[in-house]
Length: 86
Image 1 (cartoon, one colour):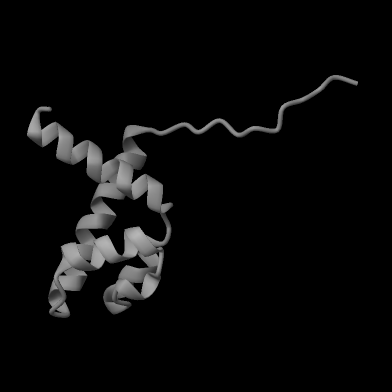
Image 2 (image 1 turned 180 degrees about the vertical axis):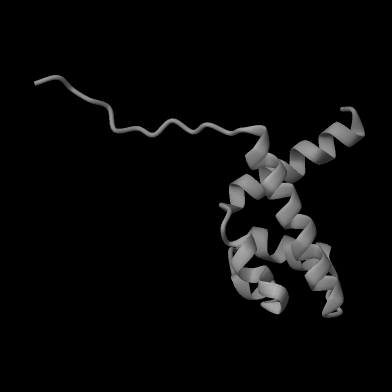
């Protein structure tokens, strides 16, 4: 019997990246509407994984949890570095 690898290959499309960026923007808007500092709250969530850093207002907590934290960090870093032209 052949040895079949069970590793999953991750494919990221531009559509997925745009969806992540749109969700981050949406969550930031919801946080700001509730009077929170979006940067502070997102950093807390990304570092700890604790979803209570994100408000449930406008379903923001559910929407951000649809993505893996590493995917969100990757998108944020890519955007930051592209703007800095490092």
